[in-house]
Amino acid sequence: MISPLDPSNLRKRIVELDDRRRDLLAQLLRPSPMVIGYLYKMRRRCGSPRCKCSRGELHSSWYLSRRQEGRTKLTYVGRVVPQWLGERVGRYRQYQKRLAAMRKMDAEISRLLNQLRDEKVQTLEQATKRR
Ligand SMILES: [Zn+2]
Image 1 (cartoon, helix red, strand yellow):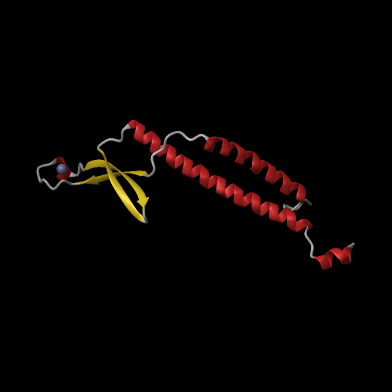
Image 2 (cartoon, rainbow, N blue to C red):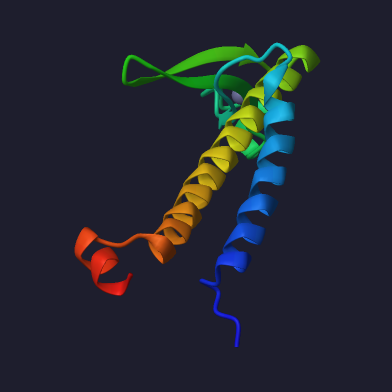
């Protein structure tokens, strides 16, 4: 039976991860313009009793939310999100996701390399006893 810790399995898994990592890196290397933050749609009532919002059709507007000096900063965008802004915020979000995926792969590659090392590593005492 082949163990998942089998060195050839480990090597295969590491090489696969490294291939996927390289593809990811290629996507990350030349980023297009991005805008930092996340878009939020807020719905509210204006308070006028004769307005449609008093019957449940709330006013909606978009805000951009981002962390700044440890606090969340909300910036008013408008009733609609301009296309360029939507694209740039989307790219930022995608970039962040890819970075997170890359960190995960790095950690996994590192973990597998540790396993590979541990298959071969000995203390001096073990090495001299078994030779
Ligand atoms: Zn209203």
